[in-house]
Image 1 (cartoon, rainbow, N blue to C red):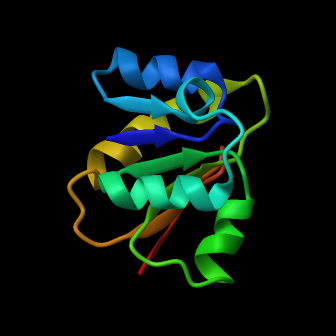
Image 2: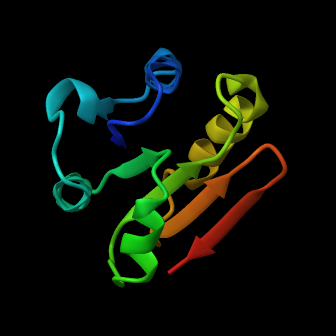
Length: 115
């Protein structure tokens, strides 16, 4: 399962659902909840979180949050094509990954930090 953060553009949710992924979008189901609530939800469902909110980087690294996998998207809105192929490829390559990770996808590169 993929959990799409509330701030994630609808384009991404539709793209992922169109490719057959099960996506729980916070904007549809839990609008206005805290980032900590989202972390707990991701852990509960052993899901992958996709976000455009850099606060999750702080939660994972500065607050030492464990057992969570995050993909952080950085791109020039609304130029989704800059990273859409990278996102789909990254999910495909990492969806069966037993370890947890924080992946940043930008038009220039993909940075993977496993923990």
